Length: 140
Image (cartoon, rainbow, N blue to C red; front, side, top):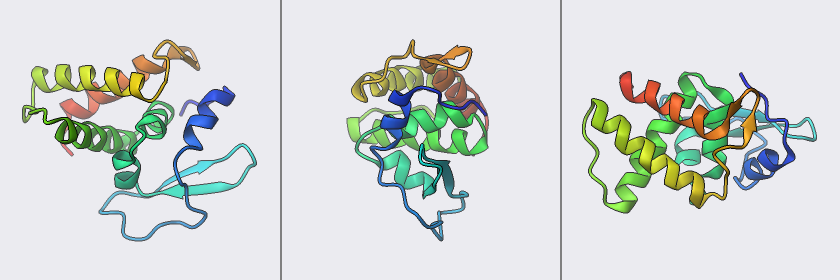
């Protein structure tokens, strides 16, 4: 799991109203935990994170986690914002991946995130797109 070293990414994560207690009943997905810069563990429901009005915190979580929870978050994020924008997503295949990559690029821009921002050895945008490509190719 990559760790955000930049204060800017911590500020983006702080835009989401993280909880101090572990949430119950997260719709079958395990709650997400983050350790803040003060060392305190904070929690979020993955669906709430994906549906949050600012896509920035969810995008950063996807990039730094790179696991099955990140796949679930990015799936929810793409589906939620596609519905909001009235976009029709194919059920599967390369067209789904392409439309998701385009949508995620717009969400990175909407969140004020630079896709070229380094996160470990890779740019933030590449990590989000790679996680989406894996999530789109696998079933939920």
